[in-house]
Amino acid sequence: MIEKTDIGKEELLTGYRNLVMERFMDKKLLNASKQGFLPFYIPLMGHEAIHIGIGLALRDNDYFYPYYRDFGTVLQKGIPLDMIMSQVFSTQDDNELGRDMPDHFSFKKYNIGAVITPVAGHLTSATGIAYAYQYRKKEGSIIATFGDGATSTPDFHVAMNFAGVYNLPMVFFCENNGFAISVPTYPTENGAFDQTYEETRGQIYKKAEAYGFNGIRIDGTNFVEVYRQTRKALENAKNGPILIEAMTYRMGPHSTADDPNKYRTNTVTEGSEKDPVIASQKVLKDMGILDDKAIESINDEMDKKSTDLINKYEKEPKPDKHTILDNLYEENPWYIDEEKGDIQ
Ligand SMILES: Cc1ncc(C[n+]2csc(CCOP(=O)(O)OP(=O)(O)O)c2C)c(N)n1
Image 1 (tube, rainbow, N blue to C red):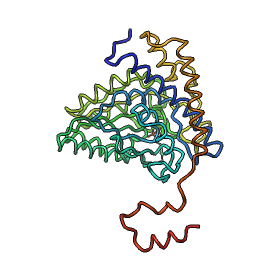
Image 2: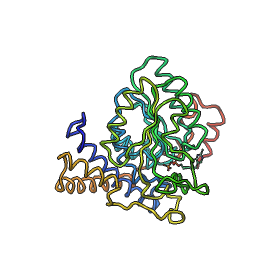
Image 3: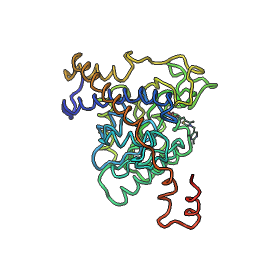
Image 4: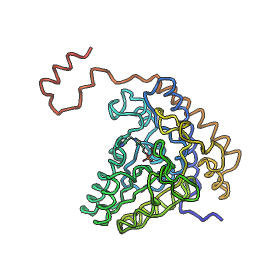
């Protein structure tokens, strides 16, 4: 029996459409990187329901601090696709001036923190923002996402401790896809830990208890459930932090620099019941919101839309090479001007 939600049919359908769009974009961006149009790409297949659920749950005053896999969350949050694509393809319109890796977004005016590469490095900054919200008595909560591997880093513990001590309006959201590159999180299905493989000995959501607040584990393959739990957490965070561990599966490689065949046999295949697109379809069908005809027409629409976008962005001009030393200083020191003259 599916519980009712406080979001309407139209919003749920928009969430599903974005989920499908994210799936198509992901596959085509991976292809674009294989064809040499992108230097690097971080696939996200398996994370879609988490992304859409969080995107739906975010309120206007909340602050989102993403990590490198969160394409769909920024899409659902309403960041224009052209803005996202110009960042991914480092075009001349990129708001980061073409200077960061694909998927390392920064959308400050939308209350979204900058994606950084060092794992968990953003968690201390996110907690700092939560402290500022509390100090300035600002409405809203902070939510920061990260992978399971991030929970084994020092920055995770510093951020969790600080949030606990100051009782900050902070949601720590772990997208547990089962792997930190080649290291499995929970090596065996029955939870028995194998000392030779472990990434972490304990259950991730239980780590919150050590810092004096609650942790919960949720199904990360059903976006309606992710929405419900995340919205509740964002609302309750005004009374103190919470840790959410959303369980899903990384259905592709870690990045384009990884070959999972070297270390992984238990993949979740596209179209299987654990695939977030299929799991989310089932939920919406049970709610009477989606049927096979709508599924097919949304697929066709998003397939075409994603192809048109990729074709467009593969041809978009890159920033002029003479701009590479711009925007570093308010007033350029003499050596920058001198170096500019050396750009061939
Ligand atoms: C501090 C730091 N150490 C190591 C790396 C290399 N690295 C990049 S991603 C990654 C795995 C992260 O796994 P997880 O946190 O589970 O997130 P996932 O990529 O699986 O979503 C590692 C070790 C890094 N970027 N930063």
